[in-house]
Figure (cartoon, rainbow, N blue to C red):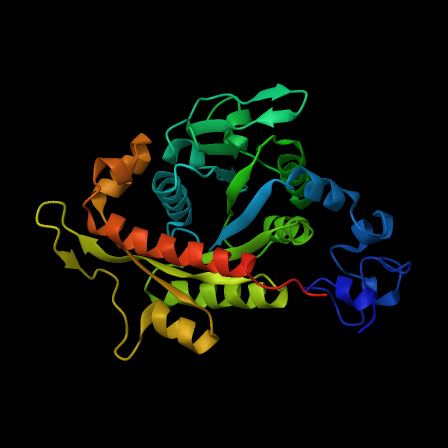
Length: 328
């Protein structure tokens, strides 16, 4: 495989010369491609921001992308739960959340810091602290109003992600969790390009719900990770059942076809780890809307117990990555 072939977008037409080729945007195969103008006028060679991101994230040991092929599966809720659970269970470690869902930033509300402002110093933007060892950066902090819409094309969204990764002063972090939008588009490609060049370990957790319409899109997300060599930490099946807040009895609400094994069977078929299930608890929904910490509000809930088991598996993945011998 030539060097140019490694720079061919997955949606490119046949015989694409590659984004770094001198013929990019100029070859006959480029006619009609929506990226033709961008390829023809864009700079050639590695993005200089890759080296800058590596430098800025030098003190971030582990990076965890939270992905979902489908919207509405609770990805942002899972991101907030994972970050809070890690921060509670390991007070001696530092954690950060980066909300790169540019058009739908929900982490400020879910983590209870909506309306806060970020401050800029000589070392860059200072993230907003949720706990002493948990901080957050989101475009939601930069909007004049929570109702303001972000109406940006891909290059501008990518530029915002680049700015977050190069200009936020995270300090020393053990884990940085990135809450992403649904799908496999610009934001995901941008974040992946930058994180690949950093030191330390990284990987992706995928969130789904039990029904086949959600699993269909998550399969695409797994394929996306495999094509881009993103290590898959595992899959979390969210909203597996409804937990009654009175008696804590769990009831299945999403019907599945007879013989379907849900996310667990999909993980077996696609050879990725299965991390576990999180039940749907109306108290969790209320806490997210009010920005409260569900883990401290309802420590004995089935969702918190399931979350603890998932956090252990995530930690074990990164510990195994850290202990891998270096490739010479």
